[in-house]
Image (tube, rainbow, N blue to C red; front, side, top):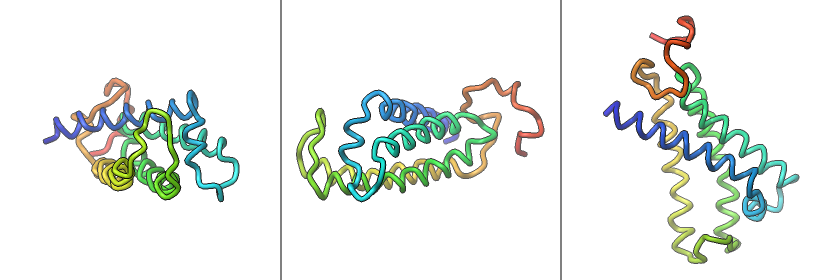
Length: 145
């Protein structure tokens, strides 16, 4: 199970990094789905993109991966109103089919992301954990037992 858990950690981490980058490269669709009650939609899109990138990287750095997982859970909850706004107001985005079924699937998928990130809030054997930095570079005082 550890092997698959770590493969899924890498998939989640990289996916979140890629999505975070798209917040900067193509911010317009994210701005479009922001609830109108929120101020500074472009700034919030950039902020969420920054924290997605940070969380994805953090998930792949053993000493901070648990904190990053909690941060991603908070982020997934924080951006959920944009998904609700998109569904309730039938906001059409380019390259996403305009179908109620897309919204029916998309809204509960946020819960899947939350549970997926929650899986990494538990301590794990850092020796077996996926890492973007060589384990030999992790200071011993940062390694958990």
